[in-house]
Amino acid sequence: MGRSLGTPGAVPDGAFTHEPSGTKFEIRSTAAGLQQSFTRGQESASYPVAYAIGSGNHAFGYLVRIGDHLFQSPLSYYTQRRLWDVAPGYEQAGAPDFSRPVTPECLSCHSGHARPVANTLNRYQNPPFESETISCDRCHGPVEAHLQRPVPGSILNPARLPAAARDSVCEQCHLAGEIRIPNPGHSLSDFVPGEPAEDVFTVYVGGNANQGLKVISHSEQLALSRCARSSGGKLWCGTCHDPHAPARATHADYRERCLACHAATLSAAHAAPTQDCVTCHMPRLPARDGGHTVFTDHRIARNPSIPPLPETAGLRAWREPPAAFRERNLALALATHGLENGISDEAVRGFKLLSRMEPQLSTDAAALTALGSILLTAKEAKEAEKRFARALALRPEYAPYEVNLANALLESGDRAGAIEHLNHALALDPLLEQAAESLARAYRSQGEAEKAEQVLQNYRTAMGITVRK
Image (tube, rainbow, N blue to C red):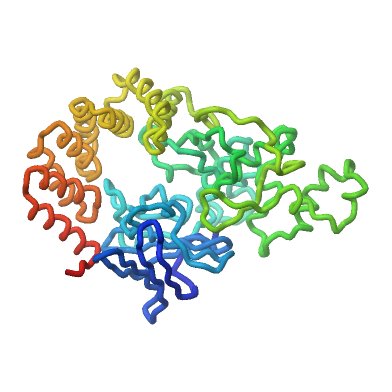
């Protein structure tokens, strides 16, 4: 955790072509630091890397800074394979570049304390981080009392918490699920160790924990194990992992953990001290969302090739949130996850639940946005417009909400209204790609091709993209 984010370290130079898009990438170490660039067709750009993400045990991801904005690099260096390739999620991208915004939610598990600019998507103060790496308070809560009097009991010990609060300390970063839904008025970064995560957000998991490992599925995998199910809640991450250990645990260390429960039941074939429990029962497997990486299978299966539990259908809460938010959070999870992944049944179910609750959602911008997004997808532009307008009224300086309303206005034929909102969005955030693309589309739709090209050129200039004539 002390290596979760920082300035880029030494990595090899590299170059490759992303075949699906024909984009050529180049990575070079210079006297000023690591430089990454792309060329696709007539467009090209080069960026200094501001931050490297990850410890490097599996891979490094990268962030670039343009003005006060942070964007994700489409490139990763895979240390296990010693190669450069596109980062997870860019494998089939039609135009991979450096325009994907890095939001505070993205950084919540990779940095100590980010310093976002309020009501923006990916703008940050200078410097962007109060602390770059994950620090003690992420697991132990506020540290002021301990710093004043560093004795046992002056700081939170996760191992002494009730099971849900104890596990939440690890799950805040090691349980991504399919989607996370913050409670109304909260963000993911509001979580404080000592409370169940559901006091701040709900994690929704799907029925696919046996369909191959995900990078952040450790808790889901462990919950499938017979060891965890038979432990009465006693087996948790801290049973085997010591976050304070100066060196990485060995197979012999993990064998000791196993023997604490299994010594009396081992067969003669397993009794030899040289036997390695982990290699057989917790093999390293490819992560289906992790690029060129492999991760430990935490199912602790007797036979890892056989799924230990049957699949369950649909999204479900890892732990249920307070009753007041239960239906709202589930509806928002279904609607958002369904839209993002093209699962129409989920989106429709979420929409129906949200519609039923709509009279109570007048101040819930996230729920109103989900309703509007589904209505716009269903070609109900006028109805979508109403919901987007209400969300924008709640956050009038948030540029993405201007774009949502503008897209509904475009769909309903109000080009002038859409152009007004899109120009305001770009005034708020000149680097918001979706605003530039929508405004160019609006101008083209009314025959103003020169204005459309000027909008795109302004965006390219702001992003440092050059176009060969």
